[in-house]
Length: 329
Image (cartoon, rainbow, N blue to C red):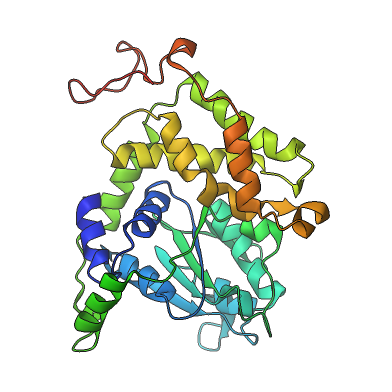
């Protein structure tokens, strides 16, 4: 199923398999995705292609300076006929919410996403409304043009499971894009290959992926190292630790494994952790970025060894899987 969704998206996004893979990992891990890159590389196209590949409710919110919190969450309106207040749902009442240029809205409007992203619910006028699963926010922002924008606060960034950058395509992919996008609009031809019920089923499978105590200790050691280093003034939160484990479980499931390896954690450490970290003044003055600091931490934290214990569960206590699928790290 993941392969079918990937192939569908790659009909629109040329030559970016790693970015598409990251988006699918976040989807199955029940997280939210922040796409940050320069204009014109396909940020909104990626989010819309993922949304159209799933037969579920999709809404797009164009974040502008005049957008109000009630436009996002909804508002109670007085009905003259019934003489009662009726709730009109906002843009977040969908399975997939595409927030375009999220940093162009005011902090007041950005904060309207905090509750729904973390708790999958919306509270308006003392009434709480549950959001249907799956629920995923895919937000885009432009890090270059900062005039008239509002940087996302730390609490907002921390709720995004991963941040990815699409980057410029290679020459062959850009030529293929010219051939496919100048004669037609591939996005308009996309058809859904799955539905919300199937995504919920896949997410429940991801939740059953086994994480050994050695891998858990390794993840905690990584996030703990970000809190102790002098190069960072803000390290990874406990939520970041949880997100990293969930993303690693989703990646392992996509690879056909029912257990997590250290490779899964290392591969996802940068997209899951880097956007949550803040470098110190000294590190910034020397030109060190959060990505380079995180790479140094990854190189310094010992990786679990085979002698330290299996990364796969013992057969008696592990979830059932295909024969021959169990290995030791």
